Amino acid sequence: CWREKGLNLPVAVNLAPQLLSHLEFPDRLARRLCGPKIDHSKLVLEITESAAMDDPVRTMDILTRCRLKQFTLSVDDFGTGYSSLVELYRMPFSELKIDRSLVIEVDQHEDAKIIVRSIVDLAHNLGLTVCAEGAEGAEALTFLRSIGCDKVQGYFFSKPLPPSDFATFVEEWGKG
Image (cartoon, rainbow, N blue to C red; front, side):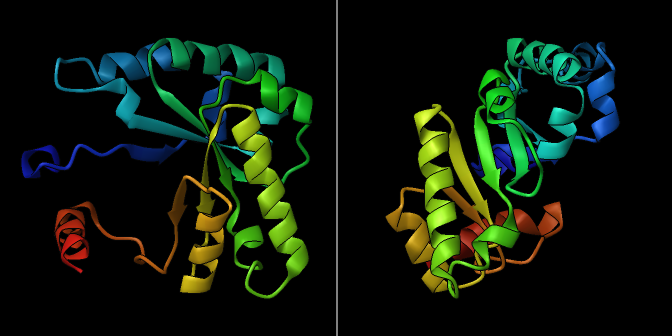
């Protein structure tokens, strides 16, 4: 277990769009995680932009119930859908994840940099943290840091790992 190794990290889980149609989902999830050792805020529920905007009224109800249960909510793949900015700021998200298709372009295109910078500014102005997916090189990482991006993920750090290898990766990364 990661906590036994001193890793008190959040875990992000992609939410299937179908779960946003079940009003009982937040209660079922909270029951599954019951127990004094499970901090609900360490579970980040990632909802794709398009799934969140499919039925905004129902989604708002379910996501609000999730927030009341202390789950962290992230709008995933931002920049690939056709969401309404009005709906975005009304939803109870904590984090916005910029889709990798935008981030991988920042090394080659000035317009991509402008869009990513604007998304980071927008998210911060809405009180959201920002995670950029698709950081593939040091140049992209340097740019993302320079614009105040809060979190970055991508192959620059590692390809996806099985949970059993993660603690070792973190330990090795900390040494380097």
